[in-house]
Image (cartoon, rainbow, N blue to C red; front, side, top):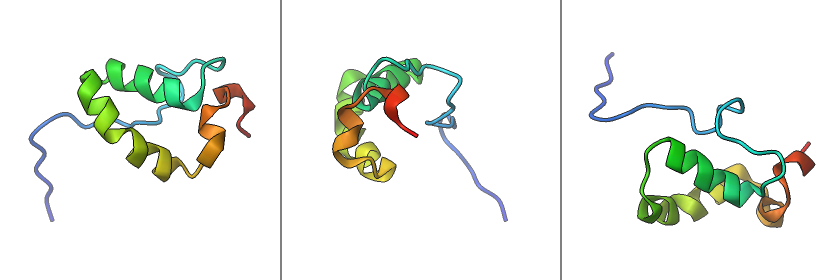
Length: 68
């Protein structure tokens, strides 16, 4: 089969790019979104879907470095 993409394909959770260990998971989503070229509106629209996908629950608001 084939897949056609009309846009940019990128890994959201490439750990080596755009993540700050001292920032919360939620802030890191914002930073990574900006690096990926998303607008603030796009980040806001996608935030809860990304948080849900992460399965971190309330831990999303802890520093990234606190995750195991």
